[in-house]
Image (cartoon, rainbow, N blue to C red):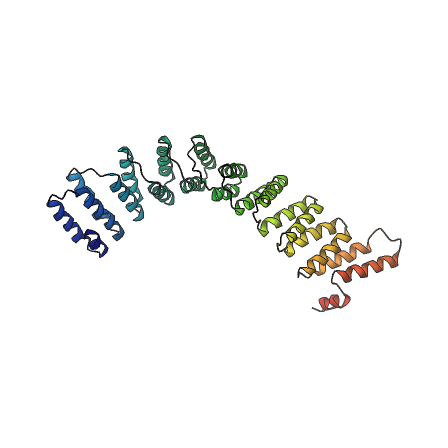
Length: 356
């Protein structure tokens, strides 16, 4: 009856009914108050909840673990996080164990308010009691510390989680791996990835994408290629952006043949090679005056539905004409016609391009 009245918005009637029932020496006095608290919170009337708590204190009724869980969770839902924190600490002082759901709710609430110090202090209380920090709690605290620019403190926090064995078996660090990569900390991101793998949890492909991008940005191409190979071994699919970054960097460092192999492996894997990726390899081969490879890739590019641009064609013609091999002008001329025809270029197309 109390619950129905609250659901209908008749919270004060529910309060009066509760007082009447308890006035009749109901043996389930505390349980009735717990029910009242549980049903008042969804109405958002936190002032009445506080009055109920005061009433309990006046009657010298001690709240049990259930009541404290209701209070902490309810105040969090009503965005009165500091009230929730007060009740949580009272609960802990009485040696009641809050549920993981409650701890998550409070820490997320504090971090959302920017109260990272209070969230960290609560975490330290959890550490002292050996309470596991699940992925959500760790994510919330580390995100809060990173957003305040305290990268080292965030790393120290994660190190303590490992040292004190406070990491759950199903830990997920995908989000933190991306965060540390974005903050220029791929080394820490790698250690988080290793923790996941040791516990039998395979990271998401986007975690590998972030690591590869981060190592390329730091000019550590070898490490980036190692992680690319690892994600393929785990049957994870790199993003097109990752393929593009790797091909671009290989070309930049003069590893054109390796870049071409990577491009071909994309085709074998059923990936769509973008025009940009083709041009990265073509332009590098063009700078190396490797005309045969330029022609071959231009044909492959056209077969993939991309029309090679005029600049690529013109550079090919110019490089061929300036080739040091001038032993046979007619032979060069024949090779030039054959190469241009194979790569989809004709005088008619060139004329139309000029008129356009």
